[in-house]
Length: 354
Ligand SMILES: *[C@@H]1O[C@H](CO)[C@@H](O)[C@H](O)[C@H]1NC(C)=O
Ligand SMILES: *[C@@H]1O[C@H](CO)[C@@H](O)[C@H](O)[C@H]1NC(C)=O
Image (tube, rainbow, N blue to C red; front, side):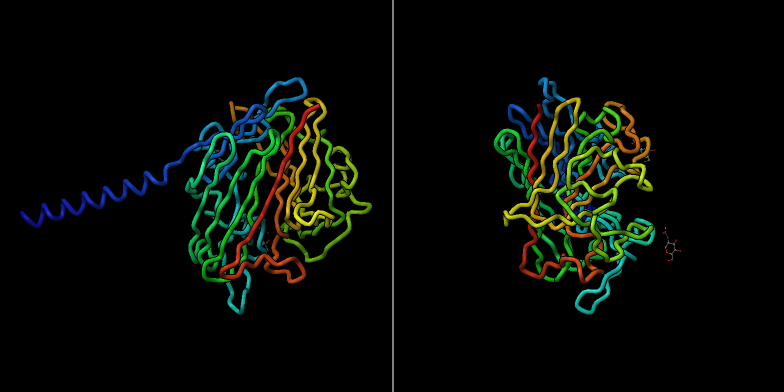
């Protein structure tokens, strides 16, 4: 009898601990807001849920694709708004060798690893470290040694910040605690400057400050070549509509651009995107070597916010990043973060409308 009650007591204590740890991992939504701007973020995947901005007439629209409920994000295969890692983009053959050790990764995209594996940083619950509605939110995540096949414990942090009324900055950091590991984080927001429910983005004009791309094979893995955009449909050095050379491509844009170096040693200008009807303009700066330009080629009849069905080309992504599959291409800038080192990635968006 005494034994039974002792066991019951232990069970109750155990349950209490389970409840406490679950409470810590609660999924929540946080809003950053000033006069011109509202951005909603959840700690599920450190995801951007909405960005609400005025158009040239002062009418507000949500300009990012997403779902009405967190359930939508849990069931999602598009990575709407998510913070992706430990290694964003593809790793060819789902393996790499580092310091003589071969690491096998989960193949969640054909033969390859995409966006950190089956349960990357976009599918975990982050911890809110600091939040002030009119300025910023900081979320953290501790990735453990061996998680999705990657080596070493990694302490990850992302801050979303409103600056000067019309800028949104994203600061990502990752500190390697005990083993060398590749790190490549990316913000996977799907933008449509006409509004998330306004159809395709082909009439947007875009300028990309990149003279080169990293061409890929038919599994979207870089060949290792670095090729000029000159004379190809990939040349956006001068602003033109996304549609203008679309027919020369097999299926839209899904390619890493090599960003041109800039005179400013901290941040390079990445892109300027404009939408005529709303007058909205987005400028983007970053400290990264590359940017993936993706025109939602794989998006297919996805029921999103307010029941609106998102179709192919319904948004564009500009994912600043290290080059895809860098771990298997010694000629690409290294993504290896050694113990004690900190990976740092900055993005700054500026929004205007006229
Ligand atoms: C989950 O995703 C599948 C396929 O992407 C979709 O058909 C289904 O409706 C989604 N379920 C919910 C609850 O969103
Ligand atoms: C995976 O690789 C094998 C062997 O190279 C190839 O035959 C197959 O088509 C690849 N699978 C996909 C989905 O690309």
